[in-house]
Image (cartoon, rainbow, N blue to C red; front, side, top):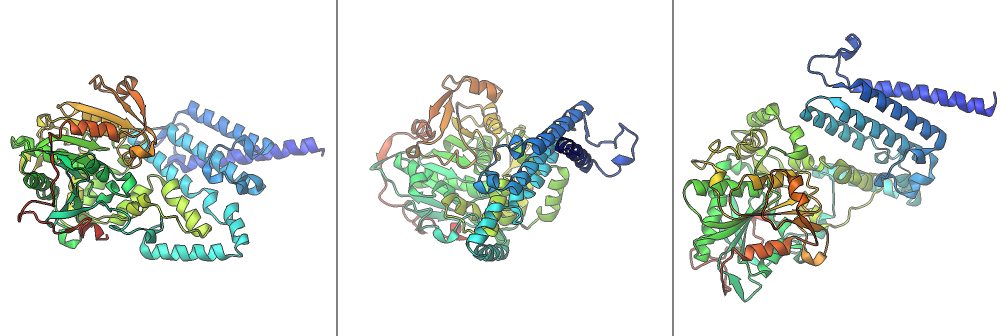
Length: 568
């Protein structure tokens, strides 16, 4: 047999093997029993495929597989930072492993996208496929990762020993280490803005911050962060602290610091958090400043809670809040992004049975869920670095905060899932009763500033924009670059990213139409927001010399207070 004939025979064998692989891959996506049906038939309610689309995908798969065999890995390999190092490109076995993985990944992803089913079913199939593909990357296995193997040789096995030690450490702590936690301490080098706790109850502490200007605006400013995280995402370091920035703008700034719930708070409800926390904080801030109105900001779930509180106040005919800012906040839950794959009646009902009458949603469980929304960046990246290469993750303030998880009371959490994520009742006038009042957002007529991040995977930009269609007051909307956290924590001094503004006051129903009339502005959105807030903050007065007011609201302890120190 001459060499040309030998290559041809080998190519045919490769094609046959690939064809068999294709059949197995397709079969893996079929439900049990589908193979017993007549040709073209499928089980009732079973997702299927368009035959023409399936044929196209099969031909593309075979074509790419032939190219891989005849032309080498570079013919089918795409950009992927997991395989960008020299160890992958210079090692033929590793290069082929990466190329085969990428080919299979593209095909499985295309198959998931080609499923004929309702949108939610397709999203769940795609999510499951993405999770499986992320886990099966050859970079995750020592036997297939040339970089980890090379490091083991260079360190004479020390990297493997260190990796095992890292694994055992993380197993004991119950989560993957994303940063060097020894490099940070709350109150020492994160959450360092100077202030004092001026009020507390069993749910929260209220922190007032020391003015940085001789004069302040007469209307105080209250921040309501999400209770699923620690508040100091707003006060990581002096250079990227939104709290410090607000204080430097002459705002008399207060922040809610949530208590990390334990079993003593396992019975707390959504009403408790709105009535005894958000509404109470508004009342106390106004009382301390001796002013009839304040300005308020809600971030993420804190924004949803602030919207509830404002609707309760509107139902009572009260107007203690002059303006509101909503940062990456869901009010209309029509589009909940990737989190929608987890939410249905069965899941919500299970949570209600588990903890609807008492119990805790553990912070580590919630943190794991959010990490697997971006598995390559927030899970497997650290598996490779920590365990295969024996590296210690660097100190990073944002990841330290991300790992400082918080619990949630079960009744609060279950009520939130059903009434917002599942049934989207907040935008239905009169559908919800909170603190004894029927909510109607049409009555919340104060001016609002709404921010959304363009690449946010938790609060999709369209969902953030949807708030413009719900609240009737005067509005300003800004779209920032990046994601849920990085888009928000973007100080002007960093001169990073861009934001988009539209000054004609028009808010068409579709986000795309708003973007079409918007202008891109380089840098942070913070300065635009600060200018807007000053327009609602009233005249300037002398800054107070101390914290709180009189004997009623004395400084209890220095910021950041005790509650933020509590661990889940």
